[in-house]
Length: 227
Image (cartoon, rainbow, N blue to C red; front, side, top):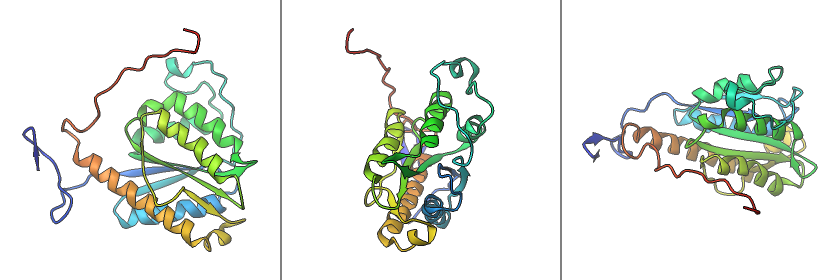
């Protein structure tokens, strides 16, 4: 396919050469091998089957500072707090092509450490994630999943990211990783996330160097409800 004199890979019978790509998956559970990890493992397996690398970082076992709104990261290019995983993961964010943000449900909301972590990660490194594909995943024993899913999705939507679709809301159920394996519908949803993420990454890769690489940027105007 030719677009404005530039070659673009076509997917079908003839597939253009695809560059090596990686999805960074953030596990916000305090249980490194729990239900959230089980969901991410299914996604990683599907990505691998379609030629996409992945890396999982578990941040839920660490103490995470809340964002203080100091805006120091805008000057430093990193968060002012250097004693937790935010800046280390931020370095990985710069190199990743796609992202999965995953969390267990605590009190009908994503685990508190995940919210503190993502607040600071998006403030300090959000510019490196713009226009890249992402998906959020939640895991629960029983309830609170849709509310938690909505919270995580808002990070993706406010940062001009491309939300990878699936076949249902991105959630799995189980009290432990073994239980999660019995959630057959949840497993197919995770596989669909991996498949659709791989598809989006390959589409975006094929657009590099063409006018389709990024959208027309609309400058943001900030207001409040008073002026």
